Image (cartoon, rainbow, N blue to C red; front, side, top):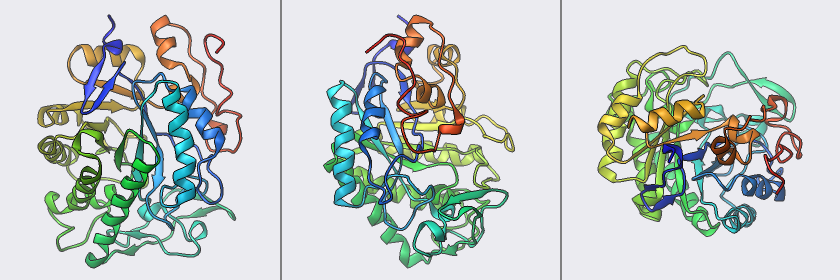
Length: 357
């Protein structure tokens, strides 16, 4: 049997295959950040993945970075997500929710004029954010005070509780891609002093406090963590990506979480390095990676013991039956980037299946 189709025990999750769906922002929620019926259709179409990791979801009101992304802080959002999880479960799938705070990637025009917050007052540069008034530059965030940070952790914990009420099978803490937890972690964005700045142990403190809050709700065996030590997206850099990977892998291993999800490279190739080897060395649980894997490369990495599973992004976006296509060695649909974030079914739920369903 192909290693991609060998079942895998990841914490409490019994995965039928090792072809996971990576979290993908698609901006199909409504103006109140409530998941819509088309989102239930979209995720149910992809329920054959070993595990679906739902898109980045706002844990607290007033922290929007994408305009039409979903939240998990209101009763209406919980109800909307319950329709999604019910649809996935009816198809025999498993789905976890990615818990997320946008940090400095948020914008006042998306949040009632509120200034975004971050570990330090350093803005994202060289990019713009989509707002109701068109594309706008990112603004300089406000540095969070130490006494505000417990409220952030509490927001993540409440979101974890709400995810349970919405019928999810677990949660993934979003510690990647230049959003709040990653901003605290990496020294290019975190210039503060005190308990949340300076050495790696301090910069990782918030991420681990959030992880522990999620564990207190779900148990470690239904919690995962995603990190991107090399990714420079959202103006992110770190002086020692390998060291932060090793430290977090050790901490996650001690906690016994279900999986560690490591983005292996940099969207823009500004930083190079091998973060999977230290992750494998120091994390004794299920290691997942993603970013540009082909089925053949994923198969080889799993067979060689470098990884336990691979999360596929745009290929799963464009191929709702991706596991079946990989098994059949069938051609893949090409994704349509022009429709990644636009409303409606085009480029969302209209990608064809290999076989009529």
